[in-house]
Image (cartoon, rainbow, N blue to C red):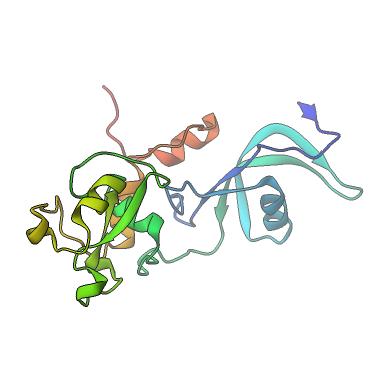
Length: 189
């Protein structure tokens, strides 16, 4: 086991709800090691798995947790926040006019009914759009621009956003996280 003499970086912990499911899949529910050590000290979490690293203070020596579970259940049925990121996640990070995939940096959001025509900034009136489609549509409705939507804009549930997030796995997954991220996928025979 390696003992760390300087502060570690890059050792986040996967945070599970009290039912052992991740709090979120995209972005993945990760806490920096400092927050995890604090939560362990405050007895808010149980350590489920650890890294092969030790941190020390004058009064404490601890293996860095790689997976922690909240002691109190966080209700996941609350309405998701109306954010650009959640709109892009709902729409699968793809333009709802042409279907081209994009990133949060590439995509814009578009008012289906333009604000100039009384359209509001709500779940039911905002969709992800690529820059070229957003410019082409301009201040018109999709019908006027002859640009039909691929999916109707709607307010997703927290569960729907969780399911959408599972389609975008993070670039790095620590081995100790795998059992908790994909526990409900079909196993190979």
